[in-house]
Length: 133
Image 1 (cartoon, rainbow, N blue to C red):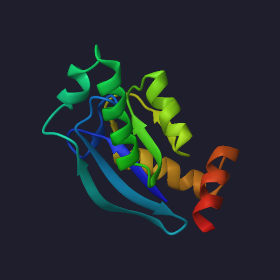
Image 2: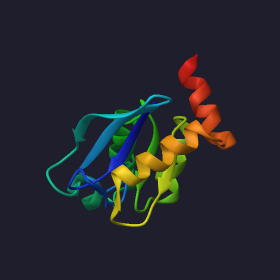
Image 3: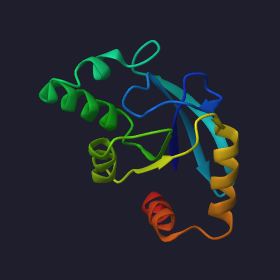
């Protein structure tokens, strides 16, 4: 299962979903986890999304484009996310997870891996079952 992290440095979760210019992607499963790639949407913050907040039609299209580009990831970690963006992720079968700014990606992966191995909650079990289909 692929997991995305809103991160400016590739080490910590430190950005809001909408304005994040890049997401770090990992694969995680019963055997552990491994780094896959960094998906860049912009250099630094995603100014296109930030600058269109007052133009809902363009803004919504840009957010949808980001959601679609991450749609193969089943979990997305970020520091903040607005309700409309969280709803879009959910519509695509993705789980948005907010964590404290500065939380290390490694720490998130370790906790997720341990949870997968021991007792995944129903929402995570559902995501894992979909992966096996």
